[in-house]
Length: 179
Length: 246
Image (cartoon, rainbow over all chains, first blue to last red; front, side, top):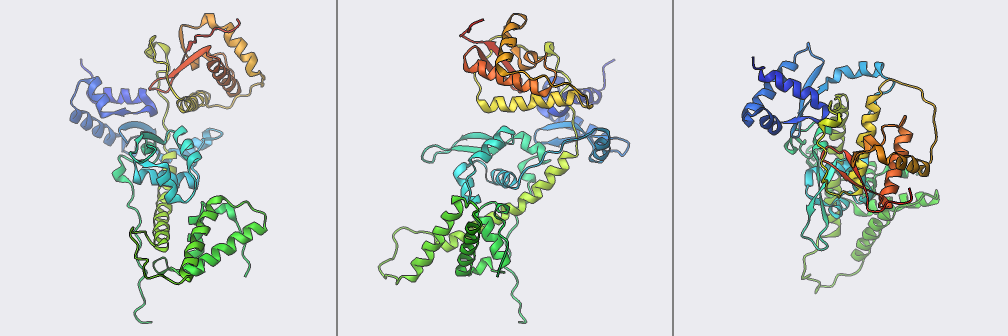
């Protein structure tokens, strides 16, 4: 008897762990169409949403993956001596935000916005695989252009860059009419 | 008026200016430029009095502001109908401050996303098994140092995940040079191409893995090893052109 496709997908997702699976990979490996793959993912994702489950399927960037639900974290902390939480410095966050909203962007353009040098920070973010070189600008010297990576999408729970929050706008403070 | 100078608190000159604008209740849309310049200068002077190092970026912005201020004191010549349009320095500064404030605001939103994501824990790929990994004999010999750094952080991560429960080990210290000799003694057991995991399979702790990594870097430098990093961030090695003294 042939196995149910949803069960095959579940098994594959289990094996790949946090590397995740894309719709394209599933379509290729199970020999189904992209839309069928998408439906399978959505169906399975829904079945894990229930409160009976401690793991869920998330979809960040191109990849779907199994993760333990956020509520499990406090118990994991008790179980293990230290569940490491990495953090990003304010300057790392600002630099990432600028790259994400303005990409592709050169180092000089980022420095213009932040008002400080960003050379080391860009290297660090590259080593953490949060940004990558996406090409070269046509400007003199052909400077390197930077963009965010799949890893960035995953780290910030984003399906696509369209999900980034809108940049806050400046409203002129209301003049007090009765002054 | 006395205030405490905490210089490291600011991410740069723009951050400092935004702080001063808020502190002095200035309006970004109708900026009292002179007040800002005075406060900014006062701040830098205080920092200097405390022997704090002032990054050059702060001085660049100060110089631009003072240039603008002094230009306005000079009588204007009528002929100065400029050929090339140049943005008014004050407008330019205000525009930059607003843009910077936007990114500062949005980065705190992103920080929350990041923290939420940290609560969701995944597990590593199950197939660390050698036979599952397609071993390509004709591997291209390329890669840059950042690929190596990236791949190495994954190795350390896998290592830490494979031993989630606290264990005690005696620390055995070994120098990079000794490790190179150990590795060379194992040349024969290793296949033509081998992964970093295979090379470090005899390591008992993270320190030893790091020493192994440093040893392999040294061997790469001496051209006794060449490396490549595949799409799964696995580091592969192959004996290089130079064979060294064995």
